[in-house]
Length: 445
Image (tube, rainbow, N blue to C red):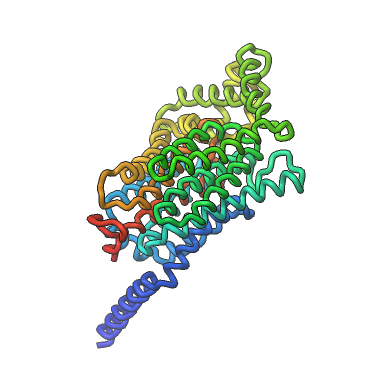
């Protein structure tokens, strides 16, 4: 009798816990709270010390609280949701194998683990159905704030290259990303005829572009054609005069800042050509461009030695030292911890396996967002497609940034990228009540 009584008590306790989980996650105030956590990611990432970690940390706490239920929630997700979650989690798992083979330095689990945490957070974001507007408000505030911060650091603190609270290259690149997302948000609010918010998006984008230019980041200029891509997508939504006005404001700002002698932006861009000439003529490798080319060469030599699993980050030091002794590369690159190119670094440290894993976290999100953006289903609302446009810009911009910088080698990049992806995916899926003939995520249980 006592045993039966204890079993009944345990069963009741389990049922009560399940009921508590369900009641909490269905509570409107809880949903708003999770939405605010998502809002804080673009709003705070560049303007507060460790701001890129605040929203993700809060979402991670929620995900860990719901850890016993995540498996059940995952089973109820749609196919594309699962593909994205598995892709993010797989990146962490494959990276972990590389860390183990490289001597099991536990501190190296930190950065790739953020992709796994983002995957867990996505399950909660889909369950709570966050409001897309909250994410876009966060983008507007974040883009405007980073511009104001850069102006303050440049004119008041006399910083030659404002960088917020991060390394300057990451700050400049992520400022440009916020600018692109603010521009993409124009289409969302335009379809809802919220013209004040449209104007705020334009202002936010100009501020964020200013932050990018003030930072003096050169590699990010390769991604500026994406601005044209976004503006081109509005050709059927905006009156020609208004589209030309927005385009003119943005490009007059860019040209004015490029030509400013005080900023010296144009001189820094011209310096790339000078550095290339010096490198290939054999004069010197001791420039930012020359050193990058040497690092890329070294990384490719290392890849040839260990093409499948790579040399590992720590193991690569011995290979680099050997290359220097053989006169294959300059000794000036020994102190650098990565190749300043995301793809080449992955090939060197993690081989073909790591390279394919890296490609997947660019191409899979891009493919999933593109399916919605270019879908011909009449059931899809224009707002949903505008969120999908923003979602496409994240992997596109980070892939381009990765050509001249290893963004995932820094805590900010390895946090901002996966969490921006998941909040945009959840925001897009949260629009589905507006869309007909699409399986809703309310089927989660």
